[in-house]
Image 1 (tube, rainbow, N blue to C red):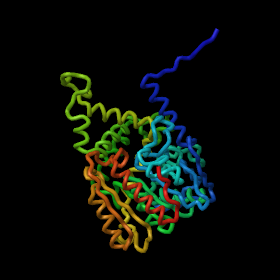
Image 2 (image 1 turned 30 degrees about the vertical axis):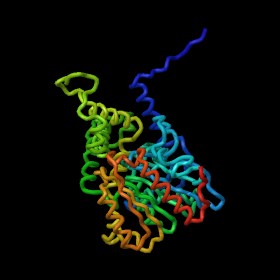
Image 3 (image 1 turned 90 degrees about the vertical axis):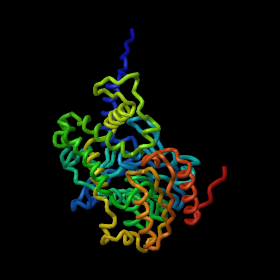
Image 4 (image 1 turned 90 degrees about the horizontal axis):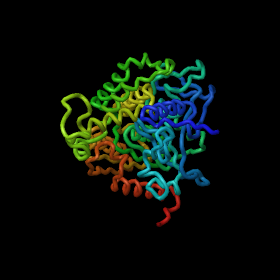
Length: 406
């Protein structure tokens, strides 16, 4: 006689399983990990040292004999190291498979592509959900606050670990674009070319305000418990879901929301005259919130949004942005989107003006799109063409063999 256990595939059970898997990823991720012992601490901008640093990363493609074909891809706020591989928590494709992969602009048959989970993240790099080896408990709010520069310095440690002295390119959008700019400012000798997309050299007051709304939503949840919810076996999922809903609105545009949903009702012919999700856009946002809490740590959301808020590259260089790039030989390609109101084109133009003032080699494109800020993650033919052309040109100038013709 045989027995079988029926798998519970209800939405609640699936969500619970995803949350458990996400928690495991914080310490033991499904990706390679570089560990740095107590003798190699990372000095943080907060003025303290972080020891026993762990960095989770993914690589795609192979390094050439000279290890000169490396491209570092930097992820945005809610991204991770799985740029072109299945996410182990959600099972979904990589977040930048529009650009990264065999034969794609960031060609993994030609380039050695590296993507690391950022410092403060929750997918295997040291963050508030990670276990503090000194106490044996999750860091929670005992984790020092980190900055974009701290994230980049940690990535530099990873590249040293991988034996990569110089990068052909650093590329990324949004918070990833901030990292690109910080790389060019902090390690100009290690960056041959830079591709910052849909980003800015500092976070605006409006963006800081949106982030504060999200953080307050998380901290107002009774299950947040002063940031030590993991020790109590709970999660402030309601607060994080609201934070994600509010943030997701900023990633889209009015036109994209109208095109996708308009004022259409959700599975009904008439309003309920209540507070259920009557409209499709309401249902969509609730789904975004609910799915996000299954894969992302609430405290990481606080830490990573704070890192973006603190980012102000000019402030680190006597208030003059051009000074951040003075003397740099890095090639730049700056890209913005017409409907992006989170990082509008004027932010990209400020970067371009500073690069011109510093004498840098820079090109700039504003792409016509109604997809909003998230356009850099979506299929945009012009972005595909620009990325391919820029990397092909950089590779030739860097002495790499020409791309094989299809």
